[in-house]
Image (tube, rainbow, N blue to C red; front, side, top):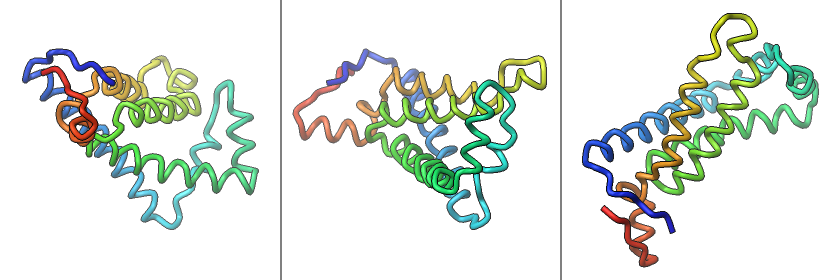
Amino acid sequence: MKKISNYSKIEVFVLVVLRLVIGYHFLEEGVNKLLNPNWNSAPFLLQSNWIFSDFFHNLVNNQVLLPLVNYLNIYGQILIGLSLILGMFSSVAAVIGALLILSYYVTFPPFVEGYTFIDKNLFEFFAFLITALFPTSYIIGLDSLIGKFRGIKSEK
């Protein structure tokens, strides 16, 4: 059972909007990849330029793993996005989303070719962590409804 703190209305609003924005972004990215018959993760993986670059380059050359990476990327983004938007299992989805975004950051970190450690992936990583740590889906979302059916009450 998740314990929900006594959030103010503005805190709930901001956290729910953050969850929805991240969910929409991931859903949109996944659907765009799904609808593009030419999309492939290989060009991104080939750009890898840091400590795991050999691993990511080997994924591209593996005819079994590359389709699996593509599939997991597309459907992972779609499922994470839907989960966050619907507020269903959103804490788990946010942790998985954070790990996925972290893998993007590690694949092609901005500091290798520039002077900054911060890029959009790092921002989204921390947004996912905030979403996981402050589970508003137990206040506004399907997790709240599921909790009611299971007899779990959130503190408001």
